[in-house]
Length: 151
Image 1 (tube, rainbow, N blue to C red):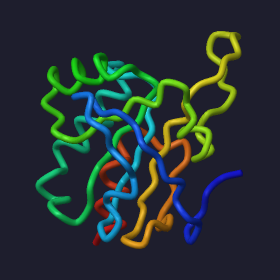
Image 2 (image 1 turned 60 degrees about the vertical axis):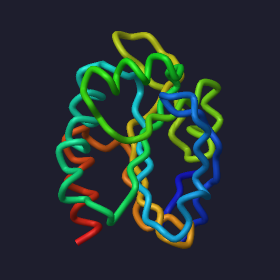
Image 3 (image 1 turned 180 degrees about the vertical axis):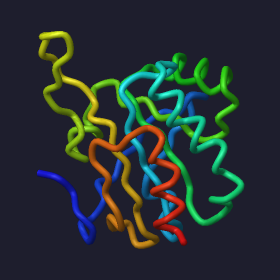
């Protein structure tokens, strides 16, 4: 069932690209953009992550950005190092968090059906509630939608 504004954001504890533990709840009192992407260092995911990196000066202290994919921390680290992203990339290897946010779903490509991440983003308010939910978001719209929501 999709999350909608006003819903409590599912909490999570995941490892980031440096092997550090990151909890969603550690950002209570701040706005947080949690975005889910299918695979590190692929064209759409790179465009999305670099768009957020490039928007960082405009985002400033208004929100924390957290990227989540099923990739292992080492792959997230290579992705971060390659593009100097500068925000936590979290490893949801068993897709438990993706399932909690309703973004682990059946997909199909070239006639093949498989389970994977539906690219989505969620703005969580200071009280840990969903402020905005963007399912099936375009990589190029992620930063724009966040900036518009923060304005």
